[in-house]
Image 1: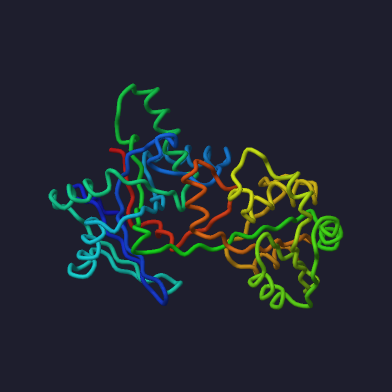
Image 2: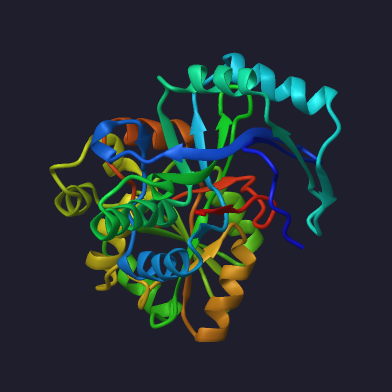
Length: 338
């Protein structure tokens, strides 16, 4: 059931559960080009998903789910969010199958909305999740301007803004599966430029990966064994990494995978045809590799401070490098253009 609200509102949104508490604001955020340094992307996007989302937004004339933005806050907007969440009855409360409780409040008081706008106006925000949707927001904006020649609701995009100072995000890894590369072949090729340590189980390999400094990758497949890549040949690595990137960008494990391991060691590009993506769960990645006769590449999550530093320098990490959470639940708040 969809219910149209009677008056404009910003929304306080809370997610809570075992080890989880995140509060933020859902509203429509003015769109800004990356060079304006207001909303900072940190990940590259692909044309296919943008085209798909553009078709959906154009047809529905709506933002059907918020993107996820982080900002460095600690100001009056956050204090108001906490006051609302602890003193007022929610509009909506539900528990999803993952055990997370979702609660939503509407802020309609113009004085409170003015306070929020004043606090947030001078701040930067990092796109934690929703790079393709944000890119689509901006394509749709240009499309509507070309058609209508005027400003309108397409100059804004539905967003969840979370103060990362008060509610630090949970950053998880995104693993890769290479269906066309059998595990024995992947190991053999890797030995020309990496040290390879063999383990008789995925559990022991994951434990070793956790305690190993990056860059390091764990390979696994249907054999039940796992194989840890460490200590790459420094000359080969230096030759493979781009010279126009910062040292911090070149040190990211996803950068090393994209620029060195995939193209130089295994002879493939990091694209949607060659590389499948599995969020968070290394066991799911290994099961997919086993079904396809390929290789699972297990990564450690990036550090939040590294992602923030890369974005602040105007750089973008390789695609599918980060998975910030908890993500907003689709369906609580939709924004229609009419």
